Length: 375
Image (cartoon, rainbow, N blue to C red; front, top):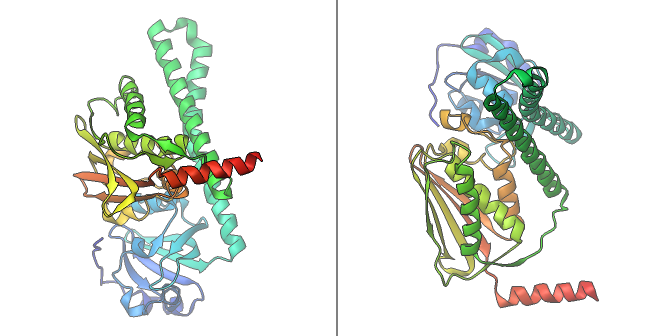
């Protein structure tokens, strides 16, 4: 990501006290996303020379939670002053959890304070951020459900039948959205606690994709985000079966294909190609490609994190919790697979997901384990 470097402000000279603070201090231009000044303590946290920080992209060094990042990007500074948590990317070593506070200095400068978290503080802040994001996700559909239900209760007999049906449809859609959110949160909870149970079986990808495409085509009759898309399925008839949990592999491939449809351009084609991984006959790969808005390079490393959402005109039209790809990757890794992303903005995006082949050895080992449990 390129940043516009500003050189006309000498904060260290104007505010020498910043140089001796024990907190990391950064002053940034929020529009250009570049660092105007960083004090020695912040340079120490980054494990970089102080003189090398000026002009760097702030978002390349500090990952904020989605709400704080959006406030900074959009110029909504009313939430500033609240304590939040960020991830600081040091020049070497692991990322560092830091407490973040922001303050508006003027229209072109924001002051950021950064202090390392103690482990118990970090866990507490993660919980607080999680509750904040989830509360926001629940509030939107609940507001719609309550509003339209109240309208029907008060004026239902006075409304035309077609309008009553439209209100009921909205209530059902929002209730379905809440159900998906709860299911995703339960999945995240199980993944985090290590209580996700997997039951492996040989899976025919061609049969599975027949089911997935039928599901998506049914949605196209009800949702404008699905209409006009076509599918190109390339799964060789002699391709070996995958070794995976039937429900979980369906969830993974359905979510990736569903995203490919929702985030593609209207009347475009979504391609699904399955094959053995080159030079590795023990793994099957599925490539899911769409033609759409794509994912910028600077966001690709964050796309599989919890509550990650890319802000652009197309994604703003699509409802989502930002949990789908996190769950997708976690389930894929749990089943012994892997997932990769390649994207060219405004052109194509390809997710490549791999799973083990259902070899005779794996099936025999599973039967042996089941026999031992029954004994």
